Image 1: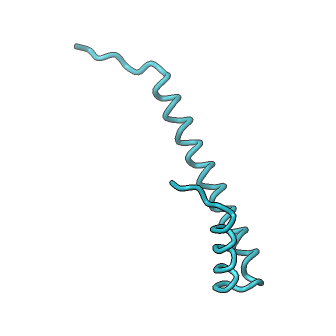
Image 2 (image 1 turned 45 degrees about the horizontal axis):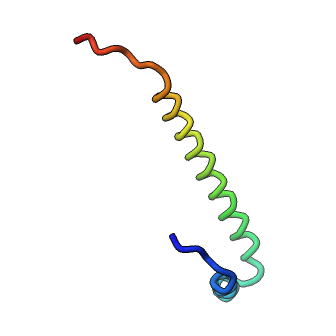
Length: 63
């Protein structure tokens, strides 16, 4: 995934201002931030559960 530079970030902000307007932009930013926070929390929980499952000894194979 390529890095986003200052010019690209400014272009995204300008386009967002044109599309959503200055009044809706803070609400949109807040919603995006909450969504990203929830995604990070969920992936962290899943990762922790997978690591705990891999670290704990499972039942032995009766063969």
